Image (cartoon, rainbow, N blue to C red; front, side, top):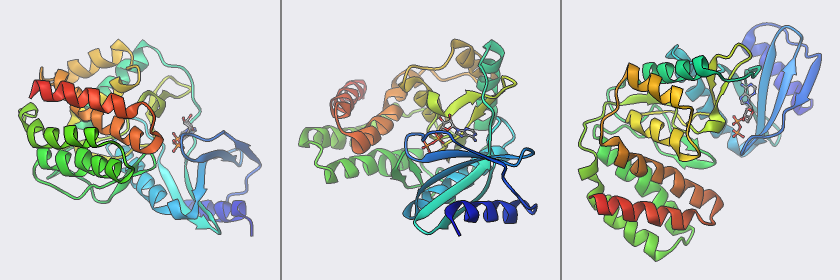
Length: 292
Ligand code: ADP
């Protein structure tokens, strides 16, 4: 049996309906995985593949997609199944036919995200660990957001950076920040359902103009962490932010916390790609220390 035979068999089993594909297209990979479309003319499935060792990453992605879809606030491709075949791991989800954004689409995205953030948990974290890009992301439940952010987000990425030999200067600034940043988080956030990796590459619009989010790193945390990431690589449309704020106003302290929350993603990029992200992380830490 080929990998494709195994994927087709998994689709048949999970959907409860014999699936016989009549077209298969390569979609070109995302940042991490190879991507394909499988269709039988009636149902289209989006398939990502990677090495078999990444099956945990796909299991966590499937759980994240379905948790976001269950909130019924923004369109999310529901995961059908995950599995392995020989050296290959795969995830199968609903295929989305993409179209164009519009003012109305961006407004719907802002309102939808605010509604998604209104879904709460009893604590910060999630039911399982997952990944952010290709890095592990620990999600053990914590009652206190500052402890969560210190240990499971900034501290965890600084630990990875130390193991990758990223500068004593970075570590020194990191240590100072970990002991002082709590003064910046003075707004008692509630544990909101987060996408977790909400940059422009992970939000798009379907062929009807409806916003769609995908490729999440789901957990329950401060909603400002999601908003911050939308601003890290260029920002979303002003219509998005206006609609979000109208649905749920944003605290003034977000201006500074945005840097605190995006530091996590910049450290992650340093650990994944190296290069100038080290200098960027140091500049962010210096500006945060000045605010403390
Ligand atoms: P990676 O995990 O490798 O970063 P993504 O999940 O971001 O991959 O997907 C890569 C690209 O495939 C996305 O940028 C998007 O264009 C497209 N894509 C993602 N999910 C779907 C889907 N459910 N249906 C159709 N295309 C998708």
